[in-house]
Structures are given as structure tokens and as C-alpha cells.
Image 1 (cartoon, rainbow, N blue to C red):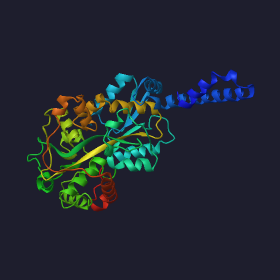
Image 2 (image 1 turned 180 degrees about the vertical axis):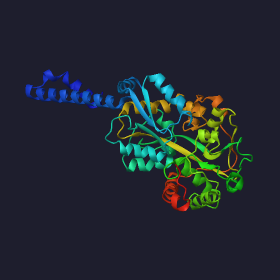
Image 3 (image 1 turned 120 degrees about the horizontal axis):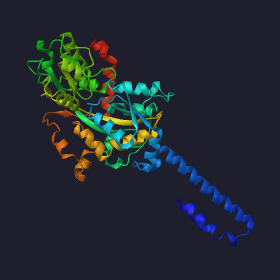
Image 4 (image 1 turned 180 degrees about the horizontal axis):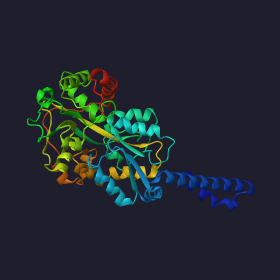
Length: 390
């Protein structure tokens, strides 16, 4: 109840002391205030804003929608399989999964293409590379929402108004099928050797995938470039391609296992998940390039055109709860609330103990540096490297 409304009610108790005309005016004012409060309450409940903690009203509203549409979430990516099944089991909300192998750019295009579509092809939520944050706001593709654990998300990893927020980060590594590759590469320069002819691939299209773009960025840093000069990364992959070592295929677990792309570069959590899933058939080795690598944060956001906005908000509450953060941690991801959970004693200690260790150089570029780098890579990949990755 607002202070002004409380005062009006208090005054109403003494209306019988007031002349009839003034009494009528005050009664009208009181009813107007009460009506506005009721309308505001109804609107707040409808959008889930009254329950940022994922309480009863938001849960009920989300269940009434009955469905959540996600995109680009492979089950072995950051343990999303468990997150999806866990959300469904907890709330009974069907999760419609679009194009698990899509890149960040594809996710954004899916929002644009389905602005007026309330059907199953319109994503409610997205999980994209850090550098895409400003674009989401500039193009008005996402809506703001602050989860109940908002304060425990580091300030430099979220938009102040709640349009997007960091979820986890990984470190770029080599994933190698040891049953096919006799000498496992240990550094970037090794990828130019004739030993790896027709064996090196990216886990995404550099024109659209944040993971592939960050791989090129990492190659730049340790081949004569810098955080502000990504061109050496494109030059490096041109050399890999010219040597006949590059395979223009979007690599994933199946292509690695079959030996089609036995040497790939991807986030360590994806590589380690592949190693666990394949369980020695074939043998997978995960290597951090000796001269150094790069870290990458991903971010969550709710589509401005989400067909199921309350389910989307509830999904965010789930992911940013201790439960959701520990699910990501089990998938070898570094959850964004990790420090807070360690301090509170809510972190899964067994999962935390399995996080990979690397003592070499790891670069953490700023969002502006990432944006500048990904534009250069996306715009110049075909002219500089000439490999149409599909």
C-alpha cells in the first residue's frame, strides 16, 4: 500500500465531519486511488514483475503459458541438458528446443525473423557471446528483467538496466582425438605442421559464432597481434588453410569422434564434456595452448518479442539460482555467481574440484574490444581466409 493511499483511507474515516460536496470529492479521489492500485497490481502480476524471486505469482503465470522456447543449447554445452530437464521436472513447463548447433548470430537473427511470430520458431530466451550485448539493446531485441540474485552478479558482467547479464565463462582449448592424431598439438604454431593436414576445424562459423570468433581472436593474441589488433588471427588461419590443414566444417562431438575433424578449438567446458561423454571411445585430450589463450563470457537475455515472457523470466530465475549455477558448474563452466556461492557455502564442492587448471596466459578482453574484433573477423573472414565454414 502506498503512503498516499494510506493517508486517503485515514482521511476517509473522518468524512462524516466534512461538508457533503467536499465529502463527495474525497470519496471519488479515494475510489480512483484504489482503482489505480488494483490495475497496477494486475499489470505487475501479468508481467511477473511482482515476483522477481520466482515466487508463486510468476510460477503460476509461467505455468499458464505452458511452454518455453530456447535456441542454440546443445545438451553437452555447459550441462544444458540437465538444466532443461531439471526446469521441466520442477515446473512442468515444456521446453521447445530450436537449432542446438546455432551460433550467437543465428540466435539474434531468429529473434528478428520472428518478431510477429508467436509460434514455436520464436525464441523466448537467448544465450550469446559477451560482445553481442550492446547490439541487443541498440536494436531493441531484448527486454529488461532483474533476477532475484541480481546483486550477486558482478557489475562488469551485466547491463545496469537488466537487459542482459553474464551467465558463465570458459577458456579456449584444443580438443584432440588421440586415436587419429599421433602427436597432440601443444601450441598455436603446431597447427601449421604437415602432421595435421585436413584435421583442423573450428566449432562454429567465424561470421556468426562467438566461439569461432574468439578462437580467431585468441590466435591473433599469440601470433603477433593484440587485444586491439585481430588481423594476425585471420592471417594465421589463412596459413592453416593454405597448408591444407583447415577443414571448413562446423566441428562438434560427432565429427571429432568420427575423425572428420580430429583437432578442434572450443571452450574447455565443451571439450571436457566431450571427453566425458565419449569415455575413451575415442580417447580425447584437452590441451591449453602453451603460449596462451583467451576467456569468453556468455550472456543471457529475454527476447523483446518473447511469446512466453513469464516462462522466460522463470527460466532466468532457475539459471541464476544456486541450483542453476551448480548445474553449469557440473558442466565445467565457471558460473558468474561462483564467488558469491563460495562465500555462502552453496557451491557444489565436487564439481568445483573438477574445474580445469591452467597456469599460462589467459586474456579477458573488454566488451568494446570483443565488439571491434568480431566485426573485423566477420567482415573479413572470407576475403582473408577464403574458407566457407558450414
